[in-house]
Length: 243
Image (cartoon, rainbow, N blue to C red; front, side):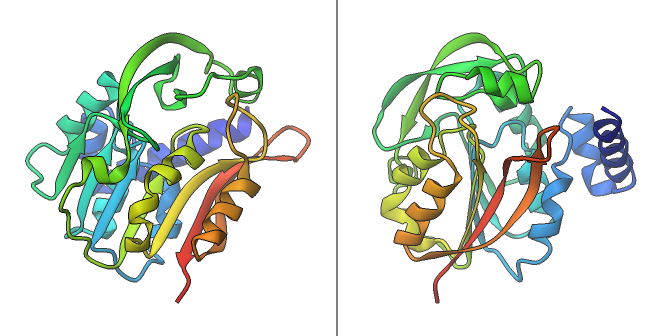
């Protein structure tokens, strides 16, 4: 608990000491500063697709490092969607979609967690609440899902482009939903787990295998989370298109 508290203190300090993030704090959006380490080492990025955008935690940091990038964001939950749109109101380079990415078009039940950024299109398992207390299911809503090319019709992808995925266990389904457009991305940044935190989810090795088959190479893991015994639970996996 002490480690968590120290992380929260550091994050609060970093946000308060960085004027760019103040608007986020005013809009009740804490910038995802844990992603700065990766983003500052990407030489350039002209287009970002943020799947599982939630309130805009990642998009806010991405906007700081890539101020001219075009950002397409996807978030199916109404409450975080409202906060996202308030945060980026007036930014013509941010296009928001109140929906999600998946292999087929339709409306599907989303299992809404007490902490909305832990919600998923897969049922929440007991392990999720065990490792991350207070993330149990509180509600269920219908959300619209479709492949990326269903939402982004006739979009010109300016290279280099980054695909970010943070969808609580639904990662492989999102990648399948992006399959027709994957060749347009130079970078993929996806959260993946080593435990089945959501029932039916693909685990980290399956994510790596899928992207390897699509000619993306695994370049590193960021923000690893461990259990009390030191076992890895999940992390943010970074891939680069094979040159």
